Length: 113
Image (tube, rainbow, N blue to C red):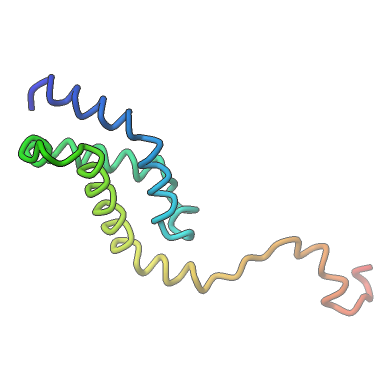
C-alpha cells in the first residue's frame, strides 16, 4: 500500500466522517450502541477500508462516500452477527433503576420508611 493511497483514503474518510457517524448511529442496534459506541465502529470501518484499497481504486466512477458507506454497512453487519447472542441476552435484561427509592412502596412500607 503506497503512501499516497493511504493519504487519499485518510482524507476521504475524514471528509465523510460526520456522515458516516450519523449513518452508523442510525444503523447500529441500540443495545449494541450502548456496548461499543460509534467511534469503535468507525475505527473498524477505516481498518477494513484500508485492507480493500484495490476496491477503492478499481471503481473511479463511484463516489468515494458510497464505497465508504458500503464498507461501514458491512462492518455493522459483521458486528451484529458477532454480537448476536449478546444482543439476545441484553434484550432480556431488566434495568434496575432507583430501586432504593421504590423499596418502601414495593414492600408495603414497614421498616423501609
